[in-house]
Image (tube, rainbow, N blue to C red; front, side, top):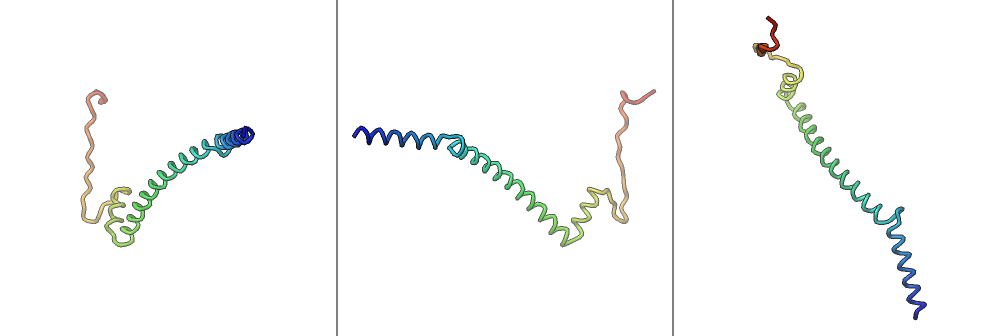
Length: 98
């Protein structure tokens, strides 16, 4: 009976050693779960970005309004018949020379 109990304790010790070993133990499982969480978050952010880009592509394919808006915002283009006004601020008294 004592031999059986001793064998069971040794077997339990070996299983525990394998479970807590640094190669394939619980630490590795926890590390991989952390990586999965990070990648899941990155995938969600990229999916939202892709959805926004897909919507923009659809807008550009369907009409000229999106292209015109982009040209105005990014390139500073003005439509025919419009007047361009540039508003600048006056130099402050501290920076102006007498």
